Length: 125
Image 1 (tube, one colour):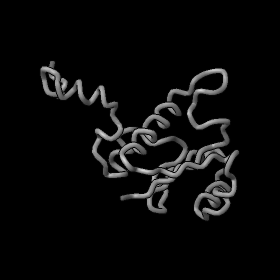
Image 2: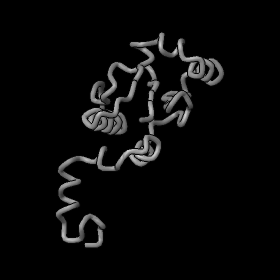
Image 3: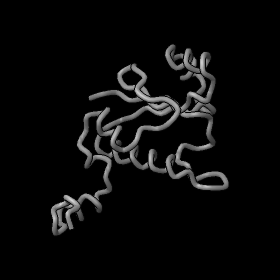
Image 4: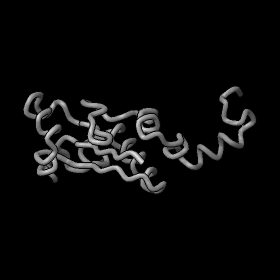
């Protein structure tokens, strides 16, 4: 299985639900990561404010931060290679990059409804 690590910018929390407004993209990423964990897919996640040593210890991330500054964050790495910077992977990118079934990140209710729909999840009806 591929090994993914996400290096987040400095945040008070990784869920996106703290602060004056909800960050829908952070909430999406947190939901995807929780679903993947339930399927046995572990993704390491490092927050610059709570785990700065991880940013120093990873030579690639450290160099990107020195060269580009914190605007380069978030950084997503897979098997030690940078696969995306400045934004989080989309749901489709999680599936593609990790080579996992898309059902791993879909809500179980949604997946069940699509299988049981009149068009079998093809979206035709």
